[in-house]
Length: 275
Image (cartoon, rainbow, N blue to C red):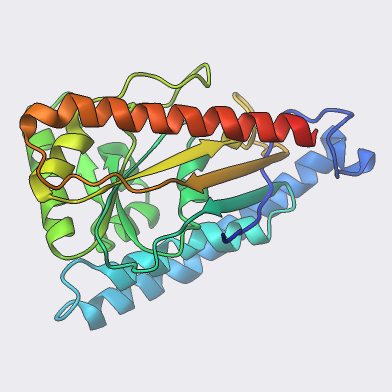
């Protein structure tokens, strides 16, 4: 089992374990958040041009943009390690072959889920809403990394996104999809949509379930400042799809949701026990 550690936020409380009361003041959180935003900006300005150069050099032999994408995700790793407010942990059995293509699925608590899951030591192409691709520098890097654009409510965009997922998997690169479709406002696991599971069955790729806890505290609603939090992503056992057909989509979807739900219950119980 491998662990990578990081810290994430919630509105400061006087009993946050392991955090000095002095650092839990509003003034301290303001200063640390300014630093964290500065670090994020520098990381983006430094790494995105490197992603462009690497993509140009590797394009002839890396059709799936595996190496460019892996470099792009390092922005999240650098930001976390230099952000005193966040602690991220990766647990579970991490696949040993980074080029074994999976359809990875996870529950969705916060935008910070993306930064946390990016700590996994292999590349995945993210299915992301089209608005993210319009963000200067970050959107360009997503395009260079061959992430998958999805325009919500557009059937043509959805069909194109599914084809792009198949393309990435055929080029031995995993894809990452939030099957809830949107972030959970309550933190409770929502129903899963069929798309990710249909893709996995069509491509013959295993499902890789991921369970995420703690990211809701990393970004505080209506506040530009980050919060204190410890977030964790747990890699669960892959679910094979060999021999499955389109008639098995619903069963695969429900089995995967149940696996993630059980893992979330376990992780939350562990956190409660640890205080």
